[in-house]
Length: 330
Image 1 (cartoon, rainbow, N blue to C red):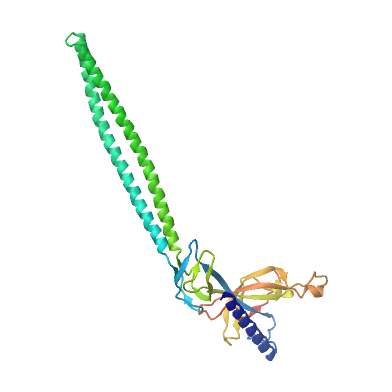
Image 2: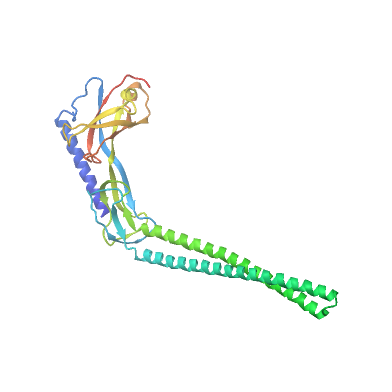
């Protein structure tokens, strides 16, 4: 299907070029501007535009929506095509569930840490009391007011309380470490969800700029994948004329110079543009230049950017440009 469209477009272009050449011969080889006036040069070429071949990124699924055909004008952000996104939506739902589980795990470990910290506070108070009891028992033993066994029981109780405190402090440290791990798991789950949200967005193909659909490469139900062309979109807001200037006139034109452009399609209408590029290298040189006569037949490519607010100028359209020749110099 794509090859057939390409051959058809090529045939139309060849027919148009033939008709244009025949018209030029019938009019004595003069275009819309007629013969060049003194101090001017008229160049001919074809209108060109930025073209973007649009395809889906990082997804593969059947096409379920394809609302536009060739020739349709679309705005930036217009949905041009959609894929069957059920698998990608399901993955996002799985990611959301994983995020909820990770959030719950963080909450559980935070609760464990809070409980451990509460136990530590209680253990510290108990240890302080047990240490006071042991100190009093030691004093009473010195005064022979209590037995050695009583003193030993008080000391043992203080040691047990210290061990309980140490255990709960270790539990708190482990809970804090578990919170860090759970938060890392949560961040990873959220990153996976974000990535899959982006991938889900890739199942919708939108126009990156306002333009005209030049070629539609796909049909409903076809399997689209990364790099598989769906549309070719022409940016008609930014068109230019590709033309060529003879070598003797090269030093008499300037970058940024205003230029008038006309077409056979709209006789008498002048489009305004400016020279935005002058090639530093000659083109169409059949062999190494040896003589002056051969050297002055060289041509240099120029690009003339044209205002095209009404989108009348289309890629491939023949056009002429009238350039005022300036005094030679920088």
